[in-house]
Length: 81
Image (cartoon, rainbow, N blue to C red; front, side):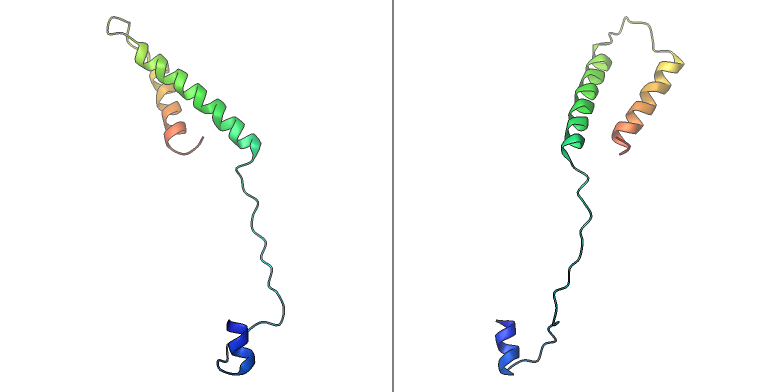
């Protein structure tokens, strides 16, 4: 409709004489990405199960395990993975 109105002189809109092509970046969500995310989600579920299976009578986690849990949580929930 715009080109008809411009052609007949009803409206004067600047229409480029050639097509403008803009390249989009390739999507980062490829098949390999989905496979890696699936593996990561399985691992995260197993980690959550491990955390939830600890009982009250179990010995408290050591400093190294606490640091590891903090780093894992930061990586998973902070957007690094």
